[in-house]
Length: 413
Image 1 (tube, rainbow, N blue to C red):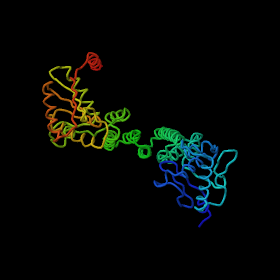
Image 2: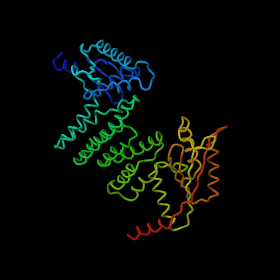
Image 3: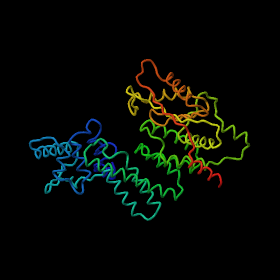
Image 4: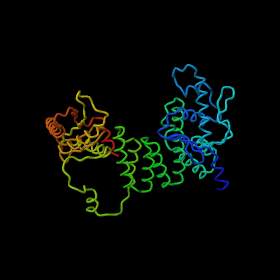
């Protein structure tokens, strides 16, 4: 064994991001699902994260016991500390006074060095803020981002842990934004793609997919960008019931304007625009496409002769209330979508707007035919003694005077 490896072994490695763990000589001391809620872990999390300033006796006792009614809370805290010292010694740590008490403030001993991922993230970020060389600053911001591997003490419910979780989440966002600014200036889009993928993985459902999409578009990888957009929309709909963020919509529009094509004849272009298969039923499309179809039809109505209706279909429970969550909602949503597509005509557009909701654009129809369509959907959706159902809202697509004036103004340009 080399001197360098022995030196590394004499460091207590602590992970606070994601799940809590402690390692000494490459052996775990704490962490994992079975011990994540023990008082030993609570004690070590608090002391190791606040090594510099220490922890007051009152704060330590609150973290260990909360609002529990304990006859002698000071004695109980001393017992936890005593047992923790025994455990640390048994794990092979040098026989020192691990937890020192000076004037009612508890501190982790300076005799055993600690390397904590959260503290390292703070340190590297402050170094990056002082760095004047763009390449070195970028390297430091990227390093700070990599220290963040998930929510700070994600399994902890203590107030102090929740406060630190918010602080580190904001710090991670700052590091990503600072790195992105430098990557854009350097036109380093491959590394931007890598950063976006990493951010979306460690901080999911936070719209980091927009970073990856921006990188893909900047590199001209439009097919990958389109697939990422579709996958992201599906993920957010399933998990949160949300439609695409304004940033993703903006990037999709930018992709459409930037896409470059080689010179081609009209028949070649038309063949690429056409659907690959002659599928029956309505046209199921993502929200941006649906929005574009709606706006185009509103313009066509300027010439008259078309009657267009927008219909919102919502899954409801046995009491008629919209279903917003629950294990069966996804299955009902899929079944409702299939029922709608099979019931409408090929010229009608369909969009899954959210969990348990669909939008349908009905072209050249009447209000009476909308009622007929609703009965067709119900026949395909309702099975046996099914207690859930569908609530329908129908509105005529009308081009307002303001819209007409705006459209005419654009046409004059």
